Length: 302
Image (cartoon, rainbow, N blue to C red; front, side, top):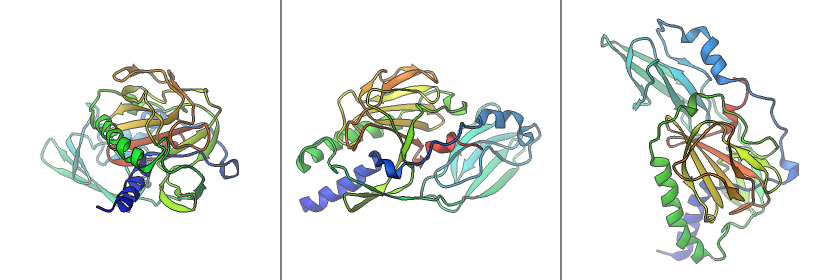
């Protein structure tokens, strides 16, 4: 295989997992405090007993995630043909990738054998274009070093995402890991040093190096990269259950260990500029199974 072509391919794929801080002129103002998702689940009449249809806490939008509830008597639920785990009270979680199709389907099988089908229109996202000046190799000095290190790093990331943990963090009202200037938005098309890259996979919050940040919800630490990765730097990943996980990139220090259960609001690390970053900031990325979703979706008014 042509080495140059292979390097470009690896770099393009690796860009999906990284971010950089955006210069101050590209910053957006911090949104107002969120409306708790749990309040919606508890107070809206659609989640009452004897439900004939599915209920969703949020309208489906590209890059979003939503708590949902099945019709009364449902014993199984399919989302786009895939089996969803259900809680005893009929709740489950669904997500829509940044590039998801414009519609989705839910199918419930009831205890009496009947089926309830519901189709969901998925609204398009509004994505920006951002220009970034950063070393495309991140913490690697040469392309050869990058290629040698990147394969094992991706293997650890994929293994962490494949772990199944028990946590009810996904049902909580997510909180900000820290408050600060938003310097990068999820979904934005990135231009690195004049060359198009992949879209930005998370939310960047610019704060000085060493600023502590907290867990946005309960979960289990599935990866804590004490040796900095080439692109992500010191990477921390927390699984919140139901296929939903958070990734915190570019940290200067990690304060928890793999396998540790963390509680919402617990200090878990410190802001840094390790890996591919043009300045100190916290990149908060989220995935629901294979779908990349916007953390801001869990924090803004429903």
